[in-house]
Length: 104
Image (tube, rainbow, N blue to C red):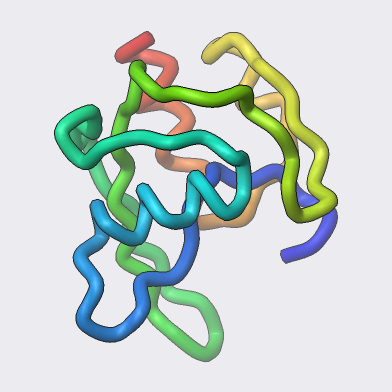
């Protein structure tokens, strides 16, 4: 979904746990190292697209090492939770904004 703002993370490869996938994806996408023990599950999104059903877990991570750096040509922006709704996001991500706003 090029051109919209997304939460970091991505596809889980076969045999991979969601937490392991997130650790891998955060390193690949943002250049930061986290451990699974630093992830706290918060909620999930369930969304039906035309050609697949997405079940996406949302984790909170407040501890990492490294400098957050865009490694895949994407733009990055630190945004206050109350401003997340100002950004166009994939439909599956939209319900997660309220959860983050309420938590943070």
